[in-house]
Length: 435
Image (cartoon, rainbow, N blue to C red; front, side):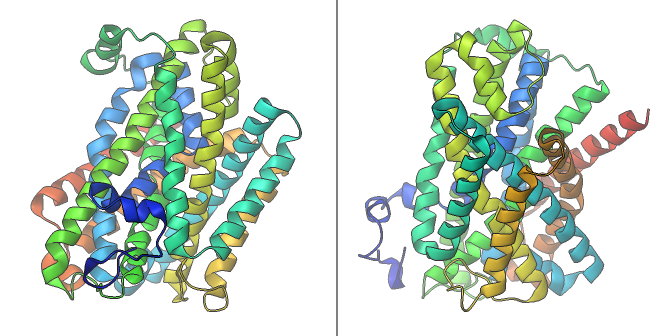
């Protein structure tokens, strides 16, 4: 990472030394965006493509600027104040709001971890054979150990490389023939909007998968980690001379990271629409089932790409899910928290990471339907995103919190627009479910 005066640490990994240009500026935003396309997200996008064909692609075009806006807000809160979201909420809002949000976040994250581990185990079993549950247990233990044993400055390089796993889903698009005229007509120009309960619930699940609370907490905390890893860096509120370069780096990182995320999501939805939907397969229970269904339609190569992508994205997403839960708990209860810290100095922070990861592992063996739990966890993410986004927008607009670096009117409009869209989607789902 960077040292004083912006020098590159000679002991840093080769990727850091080589990436002296714009690539070196990619970090929290890139990892956050890539982690959004976890195995549970892949299942949601696959279900949307299989069930509604091209008719749900417009959601990814709509959510891209909204996702960028709200992630920019979370990143700026972390970098400007030098504290994560939970700490800022604790300092400025009632305790009941903080504890309610964190409770729902923990529940959704643990269910998400369980679904991701199950999908990873199934993907390995599809490719290599053997017991899927055993593979899932191995992935859970590996993920927990890596987070506890490897310091942040090294571990973040591992996460950066894992983002490359998502290119598997971009590659699958080139395996199938795409009628671009039909895609544009049915997804953007004249999309089919049946507004049935199933359509609206799936739409909220896509929104909740794309704009998720754990991503807010993670990116804000990673900006704090990046600041701490540089001995000369300070919160931008206390170092306004660094603000221009710091905020420009955050903007580039976030636009690229969220663009990468939505491009991959679009490729997954497009692939399943062109293959599964057109062949009458409109009910996908998991990302592994989507990969299996692709095999006889798109061929062995597409099947292998889809399956290996599940494993790579899971290895990236589980640390983000467990880590965001730990950052939120630590911020709420004033615990020392950093992936750079040793377990002896931030024990409770690491315990939350272990409990969240192993809790998700245990849930795999519980007598519940993990697929239904996964789908509704995406819906829960969509529901709880609304109050969290509202609180973030209020925080980022306050000069007593952000100083002279309170968000601009343009970003304020984009952030509140995203909050309003999520609120309307959740309200529409509630009305249709009641009806």
